[in-house]
Length: 98
Picture 1: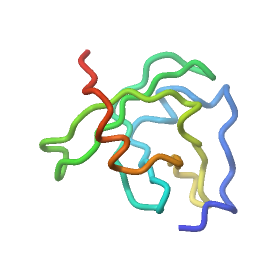
Picture 2: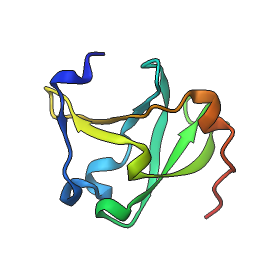
Picture 3: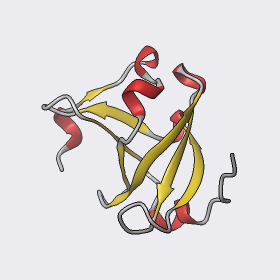
C-alpha cells in the first residue's frame, strides 16, 4: 500500500472514535495487527494492538504509544497506522493486561 498519499492524523484526532479497529502495518508493509483498545487521547494516547491470532482468536494484546505509530487516513477515509517496528519486535513486547 502506498501510504505517501495518505493524510496524517493530528493530535486532536488521536482518540478512541478514530483509532479503534485501525489496522497496523509494519516496516515491510505487512499487517501486524489491529487496535483493540485506546487509553487517553492526543499525543499521550496509549493504544493496545492485538498481534497475531486468526479472526480475533489467539491474538496477543500489546501496549504501544502513538509516538511509536504513524496514524493516517487513506483516500476512503479509513484510519490505519504504520510503524518502523517489525511484527517480531511487536510480538516480543510484554502482553498487556487490563
